[in-house]
Picture (spheres, helix red, strand yellow):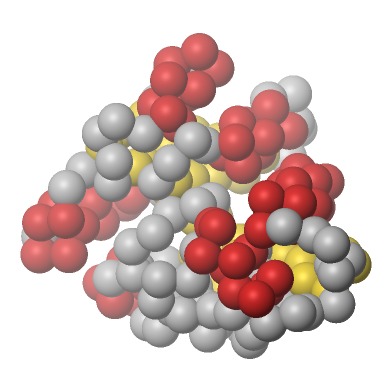
Length: 188
């Protein structure tokens, strides 16, 4: 059975979707969720779904081996960033090569980089009068949103769409594709 650890910073809708997808799977299960936000709604979701969840601070993540040691004890086959907003430290990436992936709410390389998350991305898509956007699932490296692309899915952006309309379309793509792509990665 493959083991998945999820990192999230906010509401955790993608984390919940993944947990539910793998709940009755013969292939994998979500063994833990880690968050940098002690008030994140993802913690409530994990409690309700009976999945181990921990919060940590920046020192534990970037200046000590605390989070790395938690990961080593969890022994994940894949680390999935699902709305996790901090840059991933090199010590974790080195210990889990090609085992850390992220979902980004745009078609990278467009609208990536520091500060480009959530509504910031959707507003930029609308302001730039893009005719399409989508999601990108990619490997994580030492730079924001620059790792090798695994999968992309697109949707149209109408000239009348608001950033909120774009967010709704992106959320639908995330819910549909993210668990399947994670499952395929774990199977291969």
